[in-house]
Length: 68
Image (cartoon, rainbow, N blue to C red; front, side):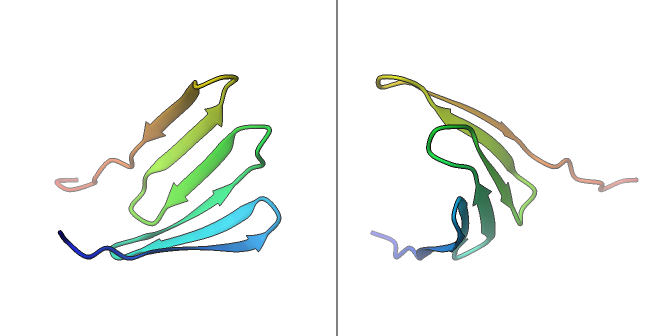
C-alpha cells in the first residue's frame, strides 16, 4: 500500500487550501451552493451537492502549449 500525503487548511470562511504530494489547490464556496476548485496543475472543477444521494461535477484541464 503506497503512502499518501494530503492536508487541508481553512483560510477564511468558505475558502480552503488543499495540499498533497504533487500539487496544491484552492477551493471556495459554501455548503449550500456550488464549490469551485483551482489546482496548481491547471485543473478547474465546479461541483454542487444536489438533494438526496446526487451530486454534479464538471472538470476542465488547461491544455498544454507544447509545439507552439
